[in-house]
Amino acid sequence: MSLLTVENVNKRFGGLQALHEVNLKIEAGTVHAIIGPNGAGKSTLLNCFVGRLEPDTGTVMFDGKSLLGIKPHQINQIGVSRVFQTPEIFGDLSLLENVMIPAFAKRDGSFRINAWNAVSDEVELHEKAMHMLEEVNLAEKSSEIAAQLSRGDKRRLELAMCLIQDPKLLLLDEPTAGMSRADTNNTIDLMKRIAATGVTMVVIEHDMHVVFSLAEKISVLAQGTVIVENVPEKIKGDPLVQEAYLGGAHL
Image (cartoon, rainbow, N blue to C red; front, top):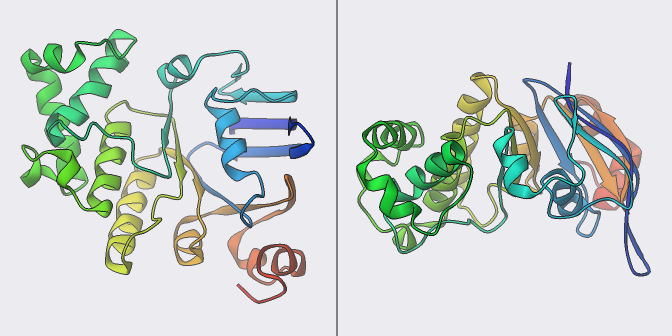
């Protein structure tokens, strides 16, 4: 069953056609990777999924409902969470507070200005947040200030902030960018555990080790258009992919 369906999506910025007749079907409970060269339109497409951009034409349907014209926080409320290229965390707060805030916002419908004060008395959210930190191997750092974390730990913290909202669809934009190989492998293992719980994931990633370790299906974007969609084994040897993505070199 398709959880996210994209049909004939177009997006133009002035003279630049960023997306052209994009069609995608993301099946529920799968890990679907979107790859392509820089400037292919990958992040633009993700922005159309979460309400940061609206397509000029086309449709984006999530769980049978249109996402067009819906504000980002409303899209989050119905079950779509996103991990950004640069971790979006509350640097001055503790890890525990970082994870409690989105849980509070999910429950009450908004990130109120005094959210971090309100969560301090929430015993149930405190327990759930600690569990999420345990899941991403950060529980022992729960009282530390988030700004002091390594890049890899910040990425795992942001994942915990998303997971505590019980998303149906998790969008990951370059989740291992800038990580060491050890941090990358730890993140792959974490994402496999998340996938095993049934969360549907869309992963944008340049690191082919990550892509082929996780993805069940891969869509390749080039110049704003999906040129190939297939299982990883067939993507590796596809000449269109080799030409568009790596200039003819083998993946």
